[in-house]
Image 1 (tube, rainbow, N blue to C red):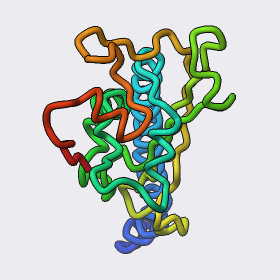
Image 2 (tube, one colour):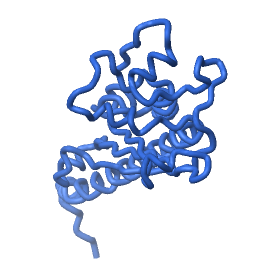
Image 3 (cartoon, helix red, strand yellow):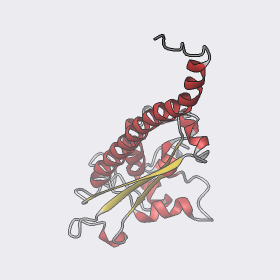
Image 4 (cartoon, rainbow, N blue to C red):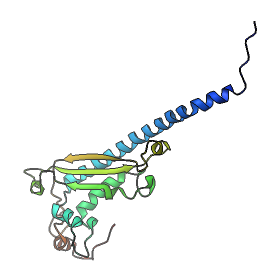
Length: 199
């Protein structure tokens, strides 16, 4: 007995039914790998920043100036060597996510440096801790994000804490320290040029 031959369009119909499911699975695998990579990268960046912050802990008063409504005209957050060292350590890890990639600006705008037990813990008796938090928006690589309604991506939050190991001692500076409390202090520590404005 002869079996009936399948219709010519059967394969096309089957493919049309299976293709969306196949694409969702493939896109899901791509996105899962991307999220794991992004999280590990951001986590390592926060860890790098925390390690530097334990050696060069910025003063809370300098950090607060960045959010103040009235601050000196020549103030720039990164002018303080301690803040700049922490942010530079964080940026050094984010080679894939930095500057325009992932449709985002610099990672430094998503970084928060703080003392969870208050700024009075910035000493070698209490030893902090000092905390580095990064809340970084990660965009998707495939259309799957739009399909799920995640057009703005998701925000990955990573926090790293370290105990303070040093208070930013720098024997090459006039006052023997690298970290400034405020602009007046900064000018004492950096007597020669005017502040370099770093975004």
